[in-house]
Amino acid sequence: MTEHTCNENLEQRIINAAKALFIEKGFSDTSMSEIAARVGINRPVLHYYFRTKEKMFNAVFGIIIQTFVPKIQSIVMQTDRPVADRVGDVFDAYCRVFGENPELPLFVLREIDRDVDNFLRVVMSLPVMPYLGRMKDSLLSEMDNGSIRRVPIRTVFITFYSLITFPFLARNFITGMFQSEDDTFEGVLAEWRQNVIRQMECLLCVDKG
Picture (cartoon, rainbow, N blue to C red):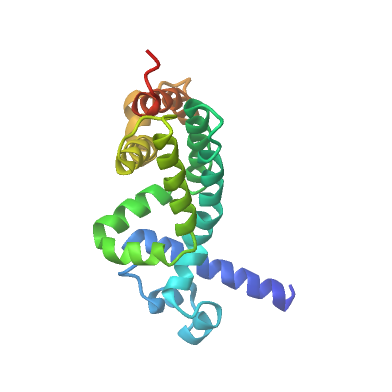
């Protein structure tokens, strides 16, 4: 095994340990010393790879956010497409991310509950705010020209994100209570997808009558 491969393996072990501790204890309550101890290295070695906990967060979750948000912006700003098509595509994109990172929704919820100010500070440090701003401006422009109904942006946000995240947060409960033997969670999501589209259409689509 080459030195380069060893370094890559150690870096991945650090990221995995940080991810586990962030989920277990929260970002603010996890120390660099705990991460180093979990990996079995000393702090100087840890600092060689990640000098701050914020850089560690970026390596664990920030990369997911930074690669994901631009994709969502691209879908939202396709204003020539019907609301239903765009909502369906955004739903599918979130399902892919949550499927690959099933701990992400619960981690975000816990961080908001534990220390929302610190969590916002860390998220705001990521280079995603311009994308969010452009999505907001695009939706407001559609409201101004009458393409979609005028509702508060926060209502759009709360409605959609509550609809998309709850099935993942309550996955074990849903599968335990409602999933039949010949059903799968993917089947539950496919059924739920249609409901999400209907709810967002009711919220945003202009009554042509």
